[in-house]
Length: 231
Image (cartoon, rainbow, N blue to C red; front, side, top):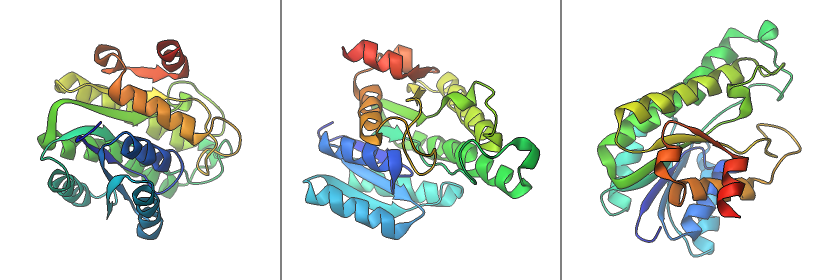
């Protein structure tokens, strides 16, 4: 990723934080964002201390003007074109697996859709004018987007919508746009258990750099795809 510019949203914790470290370690000029400026700056400091190149900018992906500013900043921070975008920002209101639709508040439903689906839309939409040749866009997702699982409520609905947004852009752009499903991950958002976020970051790095672009485009690559390709 030497000399390439990578943008990672939702990079203040969890999977996003580890993805930011992975792309910076791979040599990219990494631009990270999240709503929590203090936590984001701490991640940026860690990346710099490890020798990486990073720019941190507080961004709310629910606000398209914030996202527009993010990508304008990224083009100035890098070489004028963006090669890698990870639309990772997401929220979960409640405890994973304990938020059935029958008990979901309208406020939670609305914010899940605004952040997890519309946020993916705004991220890709505002990235498009700044994408360089051979750019790739990856959207982390989960099995709840495709399988009915009790207790995941409007979070699952929002992830299904995010996958649909990715497929729509894949159909409309020459740039490969796809989703990656790492399975259960041990984060604050999804709860205890599951894979280490660092291993998930390596999967995302593979999707950005090495996965067959035709296999990525308009698809959901899962952990099995990753492990088969990297054996």
